Length: 97
Image (cartoon, rainbow, N blue to C red; front, top):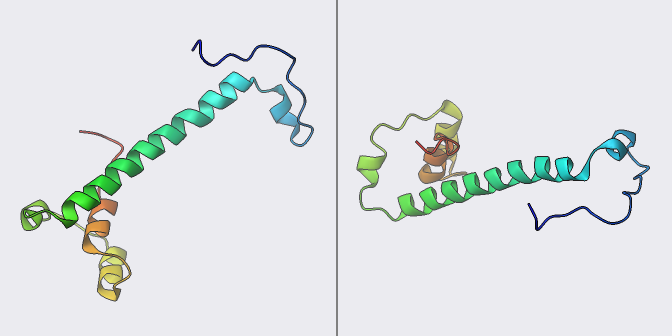
């Protein structure tokens, strides 16, 4: 945490939203940064899974036990999303296990 220091002048009041003036900027930045990084990693894993699944030779074996909700099946039938996108939406990329 040495690379991120909040030293120097006193933090100025924003004046727009009153409760933000009393929040410590270090806590605020850390609370905003961690969910952003996790969401970025989750989207990266999901996009990588979709790309690998599109070009995989083992697609039938991978999609064998796939369970889709009705909305996803209708979207695939309408052609609005592809099967790989629906498969990735049915999976959770938050838990690496």
